[in-house]
Image 1 (cartoon, rainbow, N blue to C red):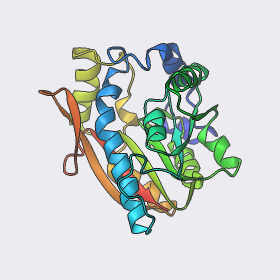
Image 2 (cartoon, rainbow, N blue to C red):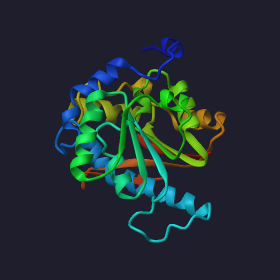
Image 3 (cartoon, rainbow, N blue to C red):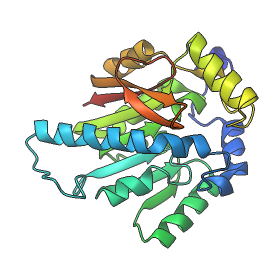
Length: 255
């Protein structure tokens, strides 16, 4: 979709993207399947999200201690939850999790997996803008690897900002629009290594950190941290690197 047509779209939903992920929904929890890169990402991004939330609670003078459930008593929304790869770990850390996705097959898989794991998560087939229009708000809102797939990023930012409670956190992750990200995330991951199905990403939909920071600031959010998520080929995993934002990065904003 061109930027001009996206600007005229009054929904964040790109039907072709929803259909793409619905078609492979059964593979969400297959660590060797089409979502394998997300499984490799998970340890680093879960640790980062946990630490950012805990630091924010410390700054707000909210006790958390050294508990195995440091996110207890927090409401958390996972936007674009997919099969629940982030929702479930957040639930295990104590958060009261709501996971939303526009794909019915994704939500069905997520519900079944959470039920089998004994984790209580409120999964809903809906959109960020519809939930925001209902007046719902959360202590923490996550939008991970999703904004590059939406039809209207501006409307998506509006909805995310509205969904965060005053004093809460918004955490996003996406890919930077650089030559390096094109080489690694598209040519390398989709065509050479075949980690992802071809066409999973469109490079012109990637977002520079400066663009995201500007969009969030205009909506009354303060940027608290931006860090890169860097692939380590020897260990075949990812690590947080505050200095390398060239490909994947996370951004934390406080309301």
